[in-house]
Amino acid sequence: MIKTADAVVIGGGIIGCSTAYNLAKMGLKKVVLIEEKYIASGATGRCGAGMRMQWGTEPNAVLARDSVAMYETLEEELEYDDSIELKQEGYLLLAYNEKMVEQFHKNLGLQHKLGIPSRWVTPEEIKELVPHINLQGLHGATFCPKDGHCNPFKATDAYAQAAKRLGVEILTYTRVTKLLKEGDKISGVETTKGTILSPLVISCAGAYTRELGRMVGVELPIYPERHQILVTEPVEKLQGPMVMSFYHGIYCQQVPHGGFIMGLGDPNEVKDYNIKSSWQFMHEMAAKITFILPILKNLRVVRQWSGLYDLTPDKTQILGAIPEVPGFFVAAGFSGRGFMIAPVVGKLMAEVMLGQEPEYPIDMYGVKRFESGQLYVEPSVV
Ligand SMILES: Cc1cc2nc3c(=O)[nH]c(=O)nc-3n(C[C@H](O)[C@H](O)[C@H](O)COP(=O)(O)OP(=O)(O)OC[C@H]3O[C@@H](n4cnc5c(N)ncnc54)[C@H](O)[C@@H]3O)c2cc1C
Image (cartoon, rainbow, N blue to C red; front, side, top):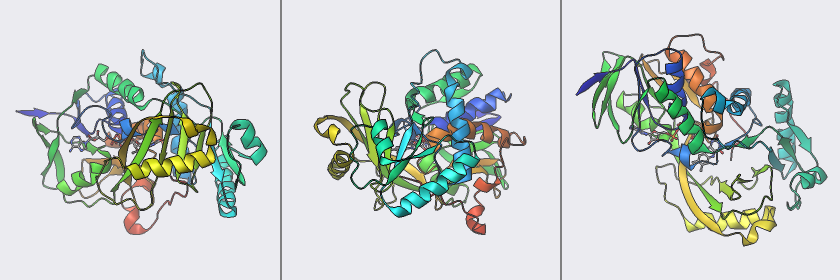
């Protein structure tokens, strides 16, 4: 069966759902969102769902700053009758050597210019924020009280429900198998459940966006990389802030139900689609976290899992039109921060797709930067 749509959104993660919602909100009548599995089955439902404004490049800091503000009122905006479990008790970014101290002060300079309420904290002040932390080797940290996290399933559900109410058709368990072109232009998609003709198609397919690009002969510099994560049994409240160490490549937060969620980035991870869990992760995670937060040493692990980062060479997302294929757009390559910037990204992508002037300059996120060499290399990534 052949259907038609005004726009097709590929991917039912937080980015796809936010984009579909915004397209419908801006007046597009027939928006179809296609998801291979279920809503939030990709990186979104597997992520730490942390949100921090403490970034080292202006594009990332601005998108995060404004998205956090949008998350604060998301339930009202989307008329969600549940809670997205937003918790804002700050992120503590730990500095273990002089090089980090220097980089963090540079980041603070940028963040303050952008009105982000982050600050330098001494080891004594760190202890006040997280009394059970081991100060060994710590030179200090930066802290932003507005940083935090929320429940990724609920936030995505909030967007999906609001999109549906505005008329978006959401097709789950449906895979896009081919992108269709008429001449150079995009003309629709072929799926496991039929063809949908549409002059506008956006890939919000996370790490799989590279494969979708290849369907129209475009090689997008997006690389999948497994990131592993675990959750412990719930306990009484011990920790307000998220604790993050770039030195150890780890992050750890206590979520409202009492469990600790923690993960690490392994620089030697093979760039492929493997999302199996490994015992080596558990071993390394346990060693690193009990060094930094020894109080956690007797906590039992309830579950471990993994998901894919969609990395780009400069660890900054690719947003916008793909010039070789008019009508085809991409929002991917989030390099571990797509959840926290989804509210602004969805709005920006809808504006760009509808030919409106985007609220923020978007050219800097374009795929052409990899040819021109004008990169935004993000220094603060786990
Ligand atoms: C372990 C881990 C921890 C993370 N922690 C954080 C964090 O604390 N904060 C943060 O901001 N970000 C974090 N991230 C990154 C964040 O999860 C992602 O950037 C964000 O969820 C991206 O959402 P998305 O919608 O682009 O992609 P996804 O959620 O991956 O959604 C893409 C969807 O596209 C679907 N799809 C793919 N191909 C097709 C096809 N051909 N047809 C139909 N559907 C298709 C997939 O099934 C998938 O559901 C983390 C990621 C991981 C893996």
